[in-house]
Image (cartoon, rainbow, N blue to C red; front, side, top):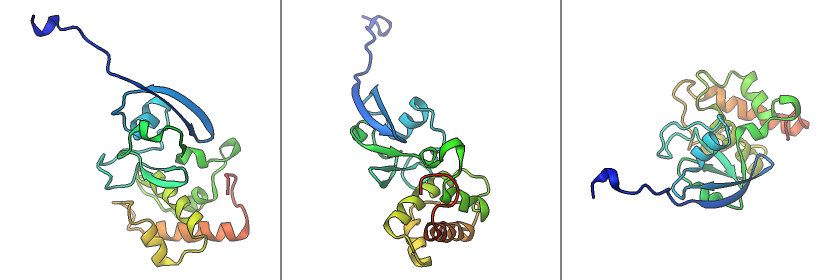
Length: 176
């Protein structure tokens, strides 16, 4: 039997059910499919950036049950039953920016923008855990995210501003 005569078989799949940005999603996925690829390709969530595919840059950061996870290091099947929040899930009704997104915009905390969604999601986790972080806490909280353009100063200022917005009550239109 030659290679061309070998019957082709479909790769095995597993059923997963999870909540993505508030919507219940069920899908058949290959067990080896990365969560980042599932979110980008299957769900069309382009805010999940894939930079290094090794868990180094943090551009693919999403919240899994409220905790920051580098989605390039997690398999989609591992997220079965979980609640996933991407940067798109922070946007409010009518596309209104979340206060964190607003703070990043106002402080010009981006240049090329590739890493921004990962920083915004990491900031969401940071401010949930510590609503009034000092500069050291901000630097520590964002240490797993890399930006090669900004030099970080404006990013740290954005986090400080977002924390101020939380103190003042909701600013912008997303969920606070």
